[in-house]
Image 1 (tube, one colour):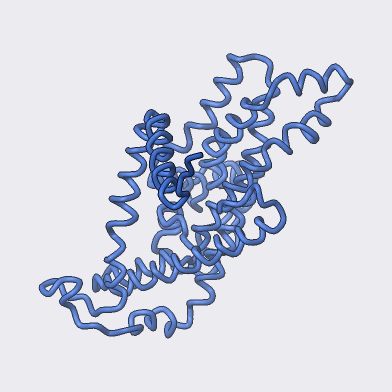
Image 2 (image 1 turned 30 degrees about the vertical axis):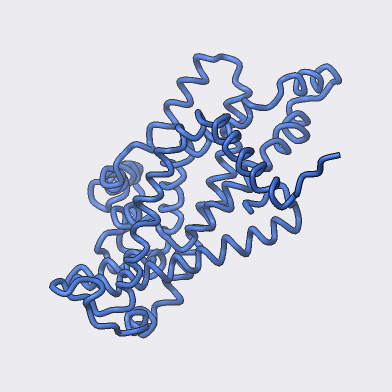
Length: 318
């Protein structure tokens, strides 16, 4: 009886199996090529630029010709005394965005699924989706025209009712809530699309069987829809936590701008770096802060993924 040496057969078999899998998945691979090229061009090729954070960048000498200064660029923000408050504000805002975004997106997706009229559902979904495409500059103008002390619509109504106008641009306390509300108004419709697609992918036979057994709408949502959405929710939360120290600069800058009165409660890392570097174009400092943000986000993703892996291994990223 002839025997085959496993040391010789195994590599050949593995190679053949890999080629077969690639050939069988050629359509999916072709569909993924644009995404792969995108990440190579914008995520992996710029990685050598991290070196800017450790040099005193000189335009003539270039990145690798500039003098190496070690961690001195990181001292810019650390020595300012604002590193903790900036990081705290950025993380707290992003936590509010992540929690409320996903919560409202799930609620909206479930409500859309429960709408019986397809025409009304499409119109509602379109109306909620449109704010996502509005420019942040226009959003800032809309908020200013609504809230400014002199001619804002809110204060015009209050004045007509005999009430004192609100001087919101002269006090920073309400602005964390205003920014969160504006963010939710703009992003909830877009975020609900993923959850709505996940709900539509649930086997309708299960839902119909529950209704035959006498399950009401709340029981259907609690015992069928929400458990089915759990993997999607966990994965989206993990992705969102990777950017927990990266603020939405466009939103904050266009709502707050150069008003120093509002900086204390809403100042985030991106705004501070922009204000600090716009005058002297210190790209080394900006790169150092960007690396600081990326490292914290990386640690957050690894930590949360490890926790999820211990609780529900099937829902972890890796």
